[in-house]
Image (cartoon, rainbow, N blue to C red; front, side, top):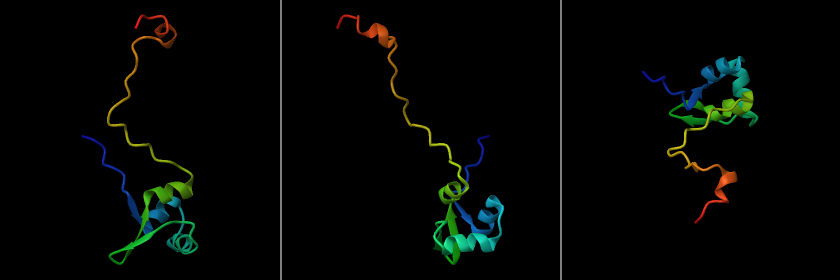
Length: 83
């Protein structure tokens, strides 16, 4: 079975756990603009990308839908082929 996808948003408590800090510290970072957040339905939600930026980590990029075509001829040989 495929692994569950990582959440795109975290609550203050989840963010604090990930950052190994307190809820109050996370709220202070939101208030001073260091950590991006949005309010939705009475909850404060923090984008996973904001956590990554603050923690200095990055998420792997989504895989490309179609891989670029690769020439079967090595580049050093391609110049000598007839057109």
